[in-house]
Length: 328
Ligand code: 13P
Ligand code: SF4
View (cartoon, rainbow, N blue to C red):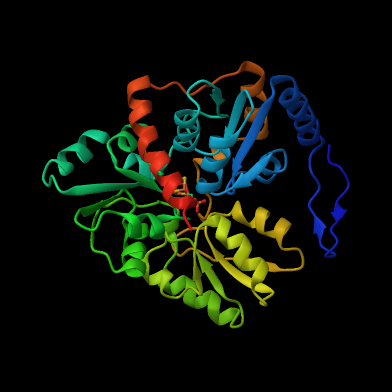
């Protein structure tokens, strides 16, 4: 059963939602009240999950929200490392996630023991870990960063140390271009963002010559070079709100389009095509469904559980990031 389609203020017709989604949303909101829970969702989550969340944002915004919340239960709708970060910042709270298997190709690329072995080759390394990594890797790092603050974190790193940047080679390469600071880069990538190519972006630009291109820094250099703006998913929202352009090409995961359409009514977002496949969806982010959000709140599981000592070490690196990030 579907509800009737709605006409938005911008005159567009939104597709009808199945009534079951509305029922689940109402149940989730009732559970939220009774549990004193907060629902945090990443910008790549399914639209119906974004719509029940208390906060939708990028990794930095989500970490900040997790650090500030007064809720007893954190329902984290994103991937596993994001929920883990929330738990590290809130060891005394219950942090649950819809699907515990929602991983990340960047996290997978950097196992703790391999990082430890590389660190042992240079005692002068200062390790900056992109937040897309395991708690074990965070615990081995001096500071964490997100795509929203990576440039600031690298600029604040001790000048006499050699920076080891893990695990995203593309984000690291972009930060080197922005800061001029040489870094040793781990060879990991986001399996979604590397699907965008120079040829595919060039083709879509030819079809929409007035539309600026906004790309995530996890995209390869050949794509970043064609972009008018390279930024985190949260900065994409403010950039698109502020630009005079009405048509904008977006090179990041498809979930972002829901958030952008909501925040920028009247603008037209064109998903940048990929070359080899139509795969601009992160299979990990999409493992979460509204039904799983509901079930995890009902069962209070799966929950994140971490060894206290590992969590305490990881927390130092995350808090250093939050402190540097808050500086003027
Ligand atoms: P943001 O922090 O920019 O939202 O990026 C997170 C992510 O996983 C991108 O693939
Ligand atoms: Fe990881 Fe890429 Fe998915 Fe982001 S989009 S969670 S970096 S696999």
